[in-house]
Image (tube, rainbow, N blue to C red; front, side, top):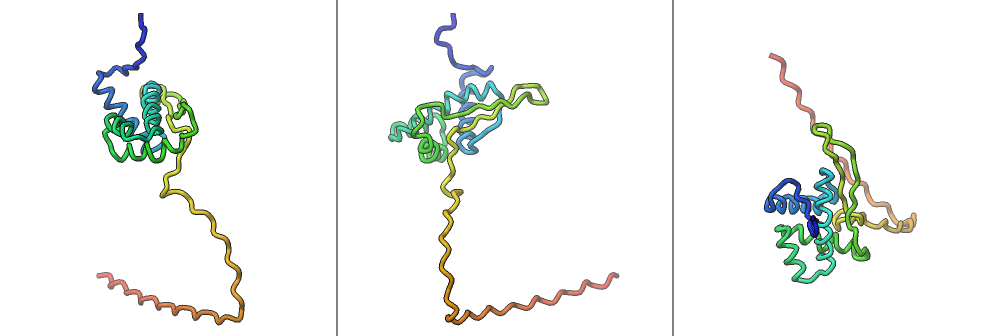
Length: 161
């Protein structure tokens, strides 16, 4: 009987499988969407979603637990500050798997796995449009236009020898 055997082994030993899932999760956090095989995406989903649940807690213990799984401080920081914050209203189901069809070389089923609540990094957020200023009265003297610099004379190509 197969009671309580929910771990997908992916034909790897435990250490290799843990490293694979850690690397896939770091790539998912960094790139927001990755393309992988369907089996790896299905194995990654519970691993990544448990880390988002830790990120939603936001405690020091949760941060250290996530760090022990991911082993990358910058990825844990991104997880806690951007991804978990974007998913704070969601109870579960933080990832989405989209099937792509078969890979050309070996016909392995491929899929995209991505975050459902796509977060926008702070640096890439578009600034709000500014309100147009009122036109300046014509009475004010227009500023003198800056003088244009003359283009440097082009050097003549040396005579062909």
